[in-house]
Length: 181
Image 1 (cartoon, rainbow, N blue to C red):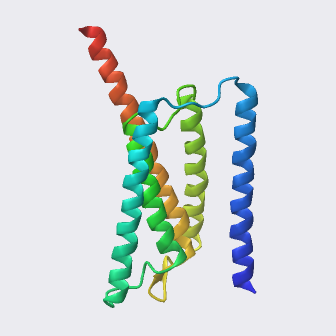
Image 2 (tube, helix red, strand yellow):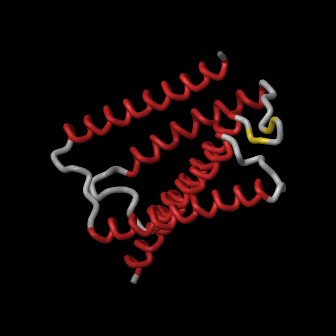
């Protein structure tokens, strides 16, 4: 029964998150006459980022399967192990898009982006603290447990926010150098 409750909890959390995203997108569309638009350069960069992220995910799955088949480790053959691969792939996509100025559309506000990701980071960090305080195991029976989900997501969000911050600083420095010339 506990396994069914866990699956229902994950499903409800996913559906709630999807519902919140749909509501936010509708409010943004009503608030602004302009739809979120990406120029051609951004769409090309996003396509390249999608392709790279896809191949990174394939590589991750291939390595995990080879490790398991070779009896080296089956640690990553769990939901958390697969989530790790998904998060690595998402991180690759987002970081490439950020670096090529293709993640934020032409009329989106970077402050909203930073606040949203900051809130998500904070929520996941609270989950990590809870896991530490309750001494939940990250590995059980030789596999990553569901307790790894928050730390994995927390690391992913930290990498994305760091990349975004570095890109903002880089853009500001380039603008200042252009003004000085």
